[in-house]
Length: 81
Image (tube, rainbow, N blue to C red; front, side, top):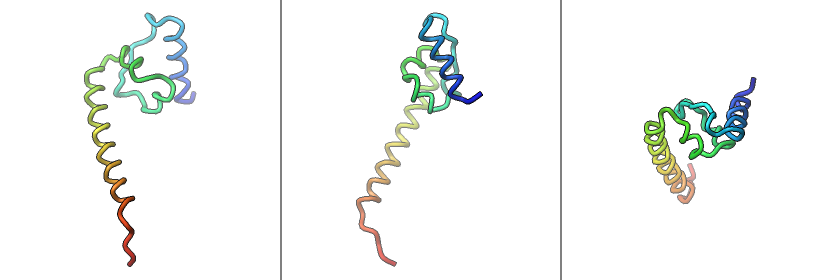
């Protein structure tokens, strides 16, 4: 079954009975899941929430550095060879 099917089924369970939605390992959850379920909702059910928050902060910092680097590269004129 496609990966998004599992997300859909989890979302259905959460929507039907939030108290019964299964726990999950957020660090093992694919980032594309956030297209379907907000991080804050997933965080409530995470067995590894603190670790996931720490990893997310690190990834956000790396993304910001990369975007800044790419932004600078886009602003600089291209050298002709």
